Image (cartoon, rainbow, N blue to C red; front, side, top):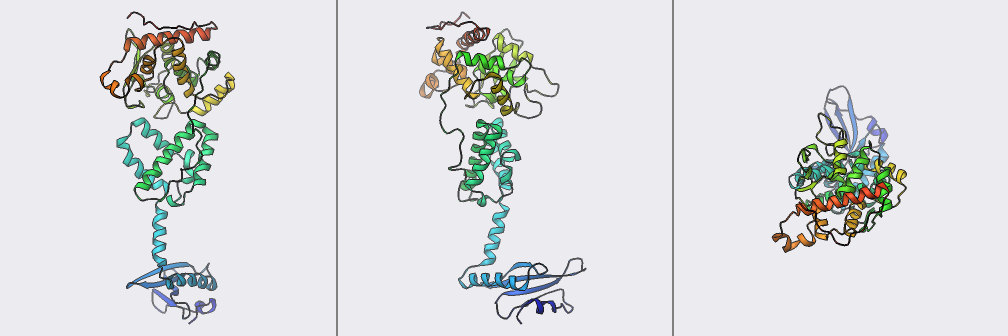
Length: 407
C-alpha cells in the first residue's frame, strides 16, 4: 500500500493500541496509530524505521495532523538515501539530541563545581557572575555548546563593553574563554569560539595622569558619594579597584595607634596578605562610610563581593571631571609613577603595591622577606601629603632623594 493522504485516512487500529502501517514504495516509511496514555484519543504520526546490526531504530518524522503524506515521503526519501550510503540517521539524531542537552547553562554548572576548590573566593565569585548572570552572556545560555560560534561571542562582548565598560568586557570575555577551554579539555566541544573575538583591551596601557588630572578627578568625587570615596581611596592607596570595592570592616584595625587595612590573601591577586597603614586622609574616608548592621562590606548594598556599579560611577565621574581617555587602573599606575617622581625608591613602591617582582622577585624574593613596614608607612605619608597639596591648589616639590622618617 502506498501511503497517501487518502489511504491513511481510512486506516484503523482494529482493536489494537499501537500499530504501524508501512509504505510499499519507500522502505522504512510508516504511518503510526496509537492510543493516547489516557485512552481518550488516537494519535497519528509519520515514522521512519530502519534495522541495523539486528537493532531496530525509529525516527518520528512528524505529527500527521500537521505533516501531510507528500512532505513525509520527501523526508523519508532523504533518510532512505542516507541508509543506502551506510549512514545511521537514528544514531545521528541521538547524537544531536545529546549535543543539544550540552547547553552552556548546563555545563557552566559543572565547570564552576570543578573550579571552585582551586580559585580564591573573590575570583570564583566574579567568574560565576559573568557566566551565570543573564546580563552578560544570557543569549548563549540555552544554546548547545557546539552551536556557539565566534559571531555570538563577539556580539555579546561588544554589547557588554558598550553597557558596562572595557574592564568588565575584558573580564567577562576572559571568564568565557576559560570555560570553553575547560569544555575542550573534557571533550564537550571541538573549538573555543572566544578565539579571535573582540577583545576591548588587547595592549598594555601606559596612561599616567598628571597632577592636574588627578586633582580634577579628586574634586569631582563627592564627599558623600560612594563611588567617589572608592576612587579617592584608590588614589591614596594605589590599590586595585576590586581590592577597595570589596573592603570589609573586619579587614581594618582602626583603633590601633597606627590604623591599618589588611587585604587578606583570598582577595589578593598574588595570594599574599598585604597590610597598609592608613594615613589621615585615607582614614577619614574610611570612617566616613556608614556601617550597615548586617553587612561587613563597606561598599555596595547587596552584592556579596562589594561595590558593583563601576561603569555607572565611572560615566558620571567622567562627566564631572572632564578628564578623557583614562581608566580606573590608570590611578594605580599614576600613583606608582608619581611616587617615583617625588623620590620614593622603586622597591618601596613595589611593597606599597604588593608586587612581587623586581627586588622581591625570583631568588631575591626567597631571601628578602622584609615587608618594609616602616618605609611603606613613610612612603604613604609622603604620597598622601603630595595628594593633599595637589588638591589644595598648591605646588608639591619634587624630592630627588627619599629619606625615611624616623619611626
